[in-house]
Length: 281
Ligand SMILES: [Fe+2]
Image: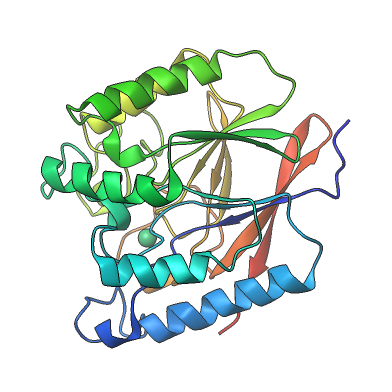
């Protein structure tokens, strides 16, 4: 029987950057500056310190606003993330390790070197049992790449999902594979918010033999809960900027909350629930 007071804190899309990069680093909106991202993260840290301790903190990627092999960005994000209560696990996003295979800006060498740098700090893929869940943390940016680490991750994920357990199996990775199904085909900007082919099929293939109970993705900067054909789906909010500040059309996203914040995730009987906590300004 899981203690329902136990929860996991889910945090994503912090886009942390050194303060001196303001004006150099392209902001995603005029107000999206490193100091504001830090301020909003301070609000998360204060809320975590004031309340009951989470069973774990899990970060859903785009920890840093630039690739993890950039020491100035990685150092800043690392110092901030050290302040999360332990245990803390993280998966990388496109801003940490590069663009997805099949996308216009995919650079396999960049993904390999940034993934190696991220893994030196955070490992991965990883499994974590906490609060009645088994979290399987993966690097979505590896899917569809022709590398040994991509093949090994896909094999590992299938193997983990095939194991019998009474825990709810939650896969957490940064970029959604699609929003409806494999046939999703958009050219209005939505395509940037999900994996292109061949990454999409590779991710779907790793999930579909033994589908998870819950898929957790970030990248959309929107908190949403969706009952998908194969799994429950949870979209994580950003602590840095809400989807309402971005130019991406959201018609194809599941409906949700575009404010900045973080989630507490709990078991609820045989299922689960997620509660939004706002970051403030
Ligand atoms: Fe992001």
